[in-house]
Image 1 (cartoon, helix red, strand yellow):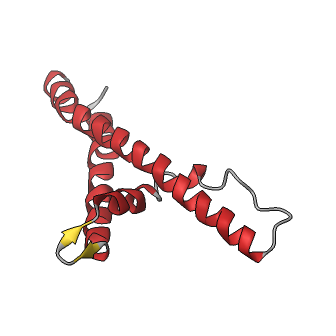
Image 2 (tube, rainbow, N blue to C red):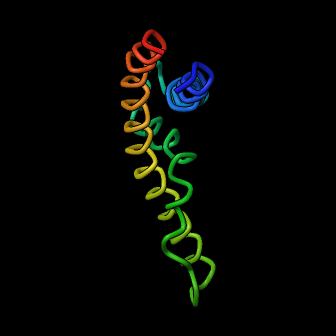
Length: 109
């Protein structure tokens, strides 16, 4: 691998997920703070929505009235946030792994 490929790989797999996660955490930690205490489950759920948006609409609300449709969409958002939270944790673990790997690749290239 060339140094340019190593740097683009490092930026895509290490820097970008960490920056996105920090940005989302800083936004949602201010929203989900009540009486000075943060609700980390809601923060994790909200931060996972952008990462789980592809899995969000697994249940399609067809043949429901308005209340059933809103309920199914709310369930889809919650499921997407849960799945996206797990994906977010995985991407952060991969990012932590890529930091020493990229340093090693850059030193040996």
